[in-house]
Amino acid sequence: MLSVVLIGALAGGWLLLARDQAGPPAEPTSGRVDTVRSPTAEEAKTTEAVKLRAITGDQLCAAVPEKLRKSLVADAEYGGKDASTGAATDTEKRAACSWTNSKMDVGDGVLGHRLLSISVAAKSAETQSAAEYATDRFDKDRETHERRVNVRDGKRTDGRTSGSAFGELRTLEYGDAAYSQTSIGMSGLKAEVFVRQGPWQIKVTYGGSNRTGAAYPSGDETRTSAGKVAGLVTAEMTKSADKVKLTGPCGIVTAAQIESAFFPDAGGPSASTNDGRIKQTTCTWSIKEVVKHRPGQEFTARGGQLDIRVVDWGDGDTGSTFQFDRDAKKYDRYRAKGGLTDDRLHTDYEPRRRLSGLGERAFAVVSSTTRRYDKSAPPMTEILIKVLAGDRTVEATFRGTTAGGGLVGAAGYQAPFFEPAVAQRALTKVTRTFLGGLR
Image (tube, rainbow, N blue to C red):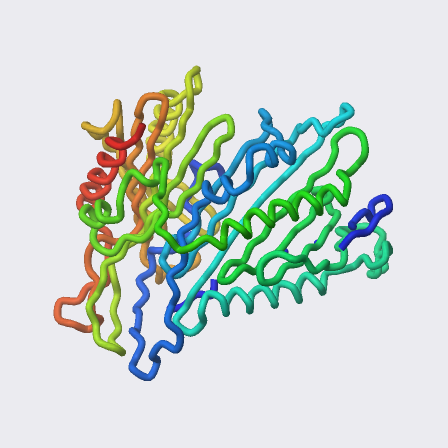
């Protein structure tokens, strides 16, 4: 199935425009078994999907030179960098990078909040090339942003005296097509630049507000800064589709190693990193079994999602050991009170099991979440392995199914289901490999 998966210059006052982690799991997405009908001969491809160059959030961050970045969002205790890599298939890519500083010294004794964010996305489908998709999306987004303009020639045109103000669009000379728009709202003044470069949709946002001194940064400052960054990112995205090696924790485990522990085919990883006071990295892979079928046949496939999360806690009384022990007690508490529930979901927890041979200490917990609003939906089952490894904790989870699937209606067919022992064995194997490569 195919899934079709940003502000002109004005001046004058405010018209200057020139549940916590321990709670129930998020809404289940892999618990229901959906049958898939393969395309028939009449539904043949009309456009060959184009392989897109790899891009990671960390590479996107690196496109902005440190000197420029520090002039826009200086290093600070109250802020940091977030880098994320979203879709990670040959035909769809997404990556983002952002920096924040909530107490930035912007000169003359003025402290302000500043945000710089970058995102890129591309998608190629059987019926639409990535360049066609980007053109279509870019044009539709531009129409949307044009409709929200409510300030022209320095005056509100919507009859209101409050609320967010959006300036006119300015055409820019970046990539194949580009424009900018500035706005003032609750978060202060910001400038956004949107660029279409080949198959890539690029968005750059820069702005903020001043906590002391003038209410907002300069409109010219935000526009010029966002433009500089947009030019650099556009140049980065013109590079060829050479294979890019993923660095950091998410590069430790290969797709082949995951497939050997679970089953083909593993895609990813997508990755996110945060280098604030506590550094965190989360890696996500999709895993599914390939089901051989003829055009038009209905089938289901076992599979799910694998996540590995590394947190560098550092030293101190609230370091890794404290966090590990707190989580162990948390899951014991959840089971003792009969699980966690709200108006939509109920999660049951099996007894926590201690594991050996992983890090300094480790445990595993199996949980099952049902939709209270949909009694016909099968439970979403997940296994979690938590490891204490020096100043770090490593958390690996698999959510999905491990058995069943195939051609619907075939002899012996079973809908995909979860086997705890099989899932634990596979997840333990991947976790051990990951720990062996963690530095």
